[in-house]
Image: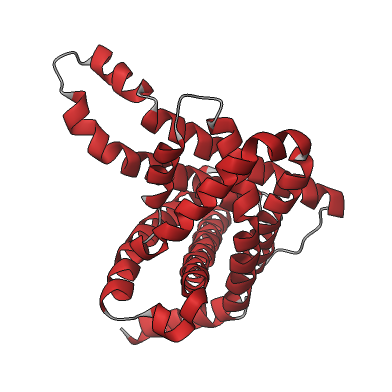
Length: 279
């Protein structure tokens, strides 16, 4: 037991050396600034389909605690209003703005993976913009699949006797969001930090992060509704303060799970070295 505690202390000391709290704060700030550009690009794509603004609001509200749903409705409404004009006139500017949050995530992950950035400035910008594009496309695709009825029609054709409407609709949003989260997180861990990593090797941290995010959102909703009144503390900016605090916790978890992937990779490398030494 004492050896386990000692190892846990060593791991925590290594993680603390990455200054995860500082990086999580930075990521939260830049991601907050990137929300509207991301939504504008995403909803510009969605608006080309049959999905309505109300359905987009429903999708995004399912991803956040109840206390933040009013802000989500306002952001989606603003993005929908601006999407047709802004997307056609300044797509590159929007992508550059949206990539700021992705760039901050890359810096934080470099710290927890203990990697020095060797890519050029232009490469970093391009990677950050590609990350923003991938996130937008995935979000748009999931919104379309959830609300266009494509999945339900395919299910009904494959299994004619199943009552797809009753069984799937209530859970499809949750399943799609979790699938999107795990895929996005795995890609984030695999490609954003400096160095090379196998995609599937990043899956453990991605699954842990997605599960922790779901648990955090559930617990955070109870905490805000039952025990803490942010409006009393922050007044008119309570919603913004709440969103930033929630995002800080999410991104701190993101960095912790990235560190878990790093530890697992180091353990695998030690096992390979031991096997090679034993031959």
